[in-house]
Length: 380
Ligand code: COS
Image (tube, rainbow, N blue to C red; front, side, top):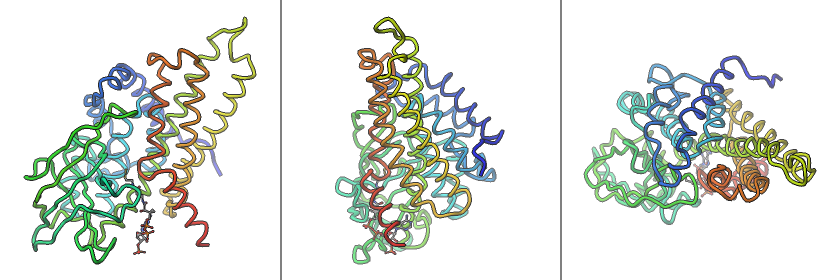
């Protein structure tokens, strides 16, 4: 067993770290305040190969492994989780889904542009009444021979207005239950496809989250991903990998908050000495460091499982469950270590605390991860 990162992985880590410091850190507070999408930054991330990291070079991707991806996600998320969720959705839901299950024509038409970052994508599963209970899809895709007619509403869609390509999950045959669900590629601008209002969020405020409305949208059958009825499995299989990306995001949020708290504790003085000399603070740092290291091992293990062809449903769910809990706990403690300054936006930790919360909710809540984990351990 080798716990060291290869030279290539270290280079990716450094590149992502430099990008986060030089391109994401300036104005991250202003973007959060104004709920402004990091348009320029995402364009540059595309140019650097971060938007299609695991996609083969033949489709304009970077041809890297999942470990590279989680390393980059951690570094970007230390500074700007709003930008990193855009990276995560494009990489592990949209690009991965298309490369793994799409037709050659779909890959040529959509994946090549998504992987290069020329355009970005969105993954549309959640509905007003189907979040965790994902088989209860109300959106319908009625088979009309050479096309589907799509009707319904999707909620909380990341990249909602900035995407050009949307992977939409919808029910074709209700009698068949989850086996009657399809995944369709919908393009922005298709008649009847409307982007709803933007959500005003607690965290990841720089990302654009919208509801989407489909009113008799005609989607050609060649835009269906996989066989008829494969849509739910497509969503589950794709989300299993997405959860590794969100676990890495949670890890990055935790590590970012910890690094700020560590630095602050060595500068701030109280009772005649730096606060890091007080055991009350030093023990918090010890706990944070330990938990972050454990979360990192779990994230890397899930990435390793995926890269080595093992099933990663369990390791990905465990990594997300644990890393998101660590993100929440660590950011709360980082605010506490900063005292009054922690409550002030200039010090970044309050934003990281707000950003951490979503990692326990999206791409499967912590409770859903426990369903996945418990089912997996109980079936043996
Ligand atoms: N890979 C492949 N197939 C999977 C799968 C996976 N990881 N997880 C479930 N499936 C399949 C099952 O095998 C089953 O198919 P068969 O009946 O053909 O065997 C089908 O999907 C339905 O699974 P199940 O019966 O377990 O469905 P449940 O309604 O009990 O729900 C959970 C399963 C809770 C795990 C699922 O609904 C889920 O993940 N929900 C959360 C969705 C989510 O992440 N929402 C966030 C939106 S994206 S931000």
